[in-house]
Image 1 (spheres, one colour):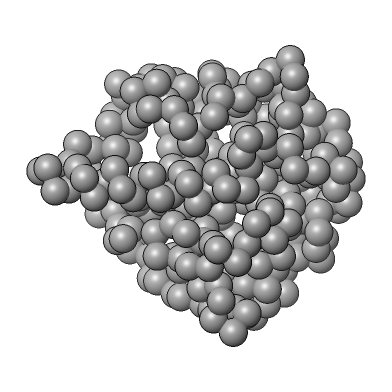
Image 2: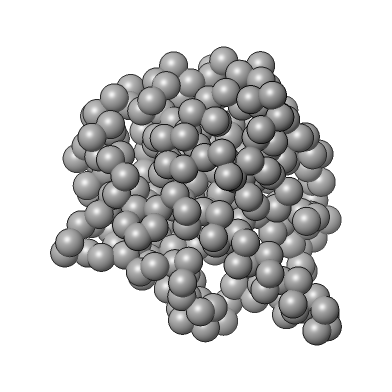
Length: 277
């Protein structure tokens, strides 16, 4: 599946693609790369990477941004060889080695935040800095999370966006051009959600809480001030479990990196730039 520029966005960077195989070809990861400078790896969430988002473009003006597509989604293969988040994190450790990246700043959104946190906990030397954007990976009985992979789009949209009618929300999911495109979009969505849901169903707590104390990289958590999908209580729990972690709010819902791209990128740049010097 092509990943290009979001609908309605002005002409900007066009990331180049790389496909890197590990484990003698058993896992093959497609990745988008843009920018110059110290490496930043962005791990996407359930929404995938339908376009090269503005906040990544802003990061790419200062860093080389690598955005891998998770196994089983958008051209990356090898999902059948991975069963747990730990498997996925170790695969990304090997993938970084195959790219020749000894360490990088790790950024991840929700599912991708869990992956980034797992990788930083398992392999502390890989993470120069860690920025978690409303990550999953914990479970609080007093603040249960919805099952994102099973919710119909009409029910999910109000949970994702502060304003589901905003230009950002409409640009993210433009209506299909015809019936064939609609069917293709539905198939891709089912495959993408099933691929990531495999690692977190039925509950996202797969032991990450027992490993968060291993994270040694400077850590920033960003949260939307109107995040209706992932309650702020989880941000407070991550901060409690990661030594020295900082929590900041950004205007927006769960999709605040896309709703408030400039503020999100600005916070990430302010945090990571000194670590890359």
